[in-house]
Image 1 (cartoon, one colour):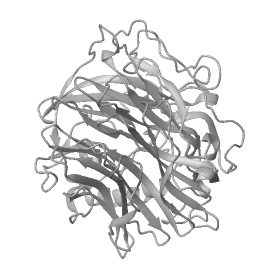
Image 2: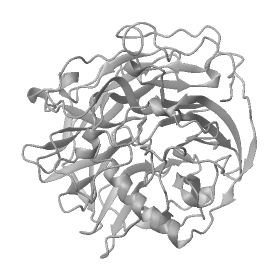
Image 3: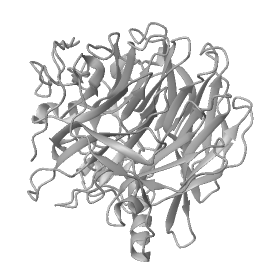
Length: 546
């Protein structure tokens, strides 16, 4: 295992709300004073069976699946959101937000009122025992909007329910409003993988989008918007139906400089012989979401998914999901996991762009610096000067010892449109084998990455060497203190995605089904099956995507 040093960060102080991080006393994950990492999460505010739903294994003190936004009116104000106290069989006891007003040096923390443990109740429309899929976005006037999937019971079973809830903050994340309910369903449908985007061209407009899965396995895209800064939300409505044998996943609205909306999503199709395929597509709206054009395919999706290379144990990752960003000149950027970027042996990180608002797309390129090992869960952001940054995990520091899984997080940066990249270590090696098991080792289906004028700020979950505090959330920023510097930089050129043989394509079809089931709550999740879930799309009596 390689030792790694980071640039100095003199005098960092961490303000830890709820006491010190992760279960009382100093967190084992607290970074040293000379590290550019800042510990964002802290001890859980939740205790006991506060949610009233105790199936599965509770990983108390485990924080996972973070997302991050930077206030455009005050770059020192950052808001992070994450799942707090993850369950093995779906969701968490609640969502927590972190607010920083000094660029990420110190953080205060506030539970979002979107689950019972965090103050949700029948009175405010948030009487749900679990929450998942946190996302946050700032409007141009500095108002922040956070969104939650809040749910109860096994999907499609009597008494189950799911809802998409939005809260807003006008004070930089110190406090949050009561939730607005965009949609609420019972046992006949399950809402999943919602995101929220405040329009950077108009503070009045905010957009939410998600897939709504019904019991036959289809999952059309639903959309809701506010035109008055969140005072009122229009009723949620279907904007794209891929058909009864297909579903969408990972819907995300990005906004072009001219105000055009582009919804990026994955479409998963099931053939008559039950084989599955997936592709990334986009659809556009030139009237702020009132109407939408037909989808355009951006790329095929060919992810095998991540596994422990020594034991083949499953790892939850972003296979089947894309991360998207818009450059200042309007260029659309897409990154995703793809076996074609890993020589067909394992997943690498793929990259494609569109210079015409998503109408046409470049060929995909492999961009991870070490294609000899699996790379997964990429996030992309673009600085104000057009520099592109991508973070991802990989296994280059793994050893042959099956008792641990050393894992690293990297930041790669390109100033020439993705032709070449410089690489910098962010975190690791840490032992991914210590992560919560939620149908696979789980740090999140995504991680956060934000940018402003001259910096990238990764926000990520990583493990700690203590079972009572398996994970924490960290922010990283080399500009946090004078003297922070780039280290271990290596140059790498993008490479063409390789064609895949028939056997690999067959494995990818199996992976698509496995990754979809990996987001379901079911009997296998309750047993702690690290290799996946039950057979079939809805092969369990109790299922949840979360």
